[in-house]
Image 1: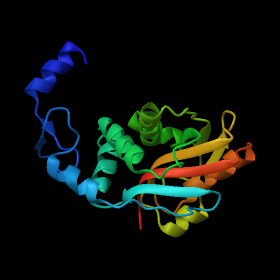
Image 2 (image 1 turned 135 degrees about the vertical axis):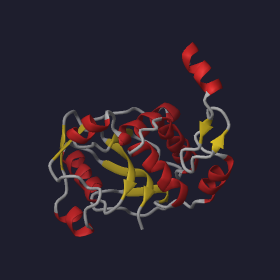
Image 3 (image 1 turned 60 degrees about the vertical axis):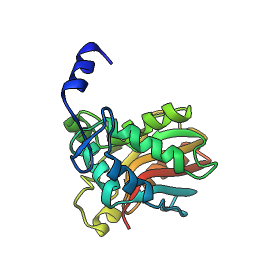
Image 4 (image 1 turned 90 degrees about the vertical axis):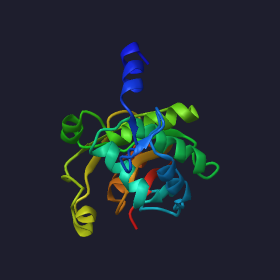
Length: 207
């Protein structure tokens, strides 16, 4: 942290990324929201077609949903580290193995935001676990997923291709699992490139 950031942290109160109330310096969540997030139950299962396993740290509601919005739409990048911390803490034994592969965002979306939410979470998770990171996928077509109906998401999945060699064991990382169409498209591209194992982790899952 540079001197300017130290002064700013002292003068500007930290606000909870979920509810906007004050919280301790440097914290992403206030104590109340942190407790509510801790109470959220993870979700597991076989996952969308093409995946060996899929797991989410919480359902897409409450504080978990607010954190996704804070990262994705309010550009609060420190939230990604909080997400990665929860994932590392709760993920089943053996799931956090292989090479971490961020689920790609359409190029125009990344340029518009100035960052890629899935890539931020994947990088933070890689730092915490020491797992290798490979942004080997690229995405085009399929349009924006947010706001589309389920049938549209499934019927018009994004086109995902390899832009680098696929790892033998891949762990896809994304912010939200909705229909699973994007994860399935990623899995197809990875398996076509030689991946033997493809699992997925998301911070939340829409039920």
